[in-house]
Length: 115
Image (cartoon, rainbow, N blue to C red; front, side):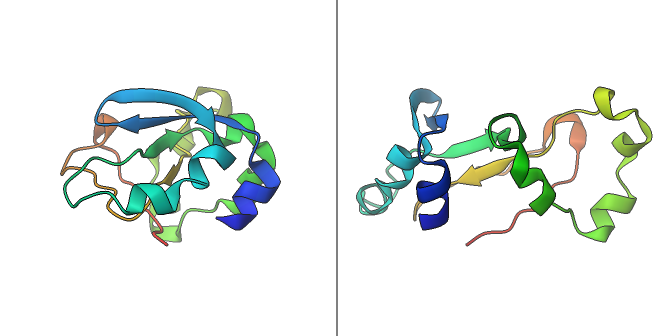
């Protein structure tokens, strides 16, 4: 998190708290993780989800390689690159962040690394 605050802290982003959107900067959001993580259990915490980081920080795309299982079974790769959906996201959330059980858009597969 310190890397993202230091390198990209000024990048604007939108966080979501149970459907309520708030504009902030990445550094401002990440800097409040301790505060958000201390909220009572069950209290919704602000969650940076489905952030199309490649629009704001394109150099990070070089560090984004899906595991072979997803790469080889991705039917969208058959499309020209300019027609592929932008399914390259970063999610950030403090302790207590939740996502309800759901089916992703177009019933796609996803892989997540949680730290």
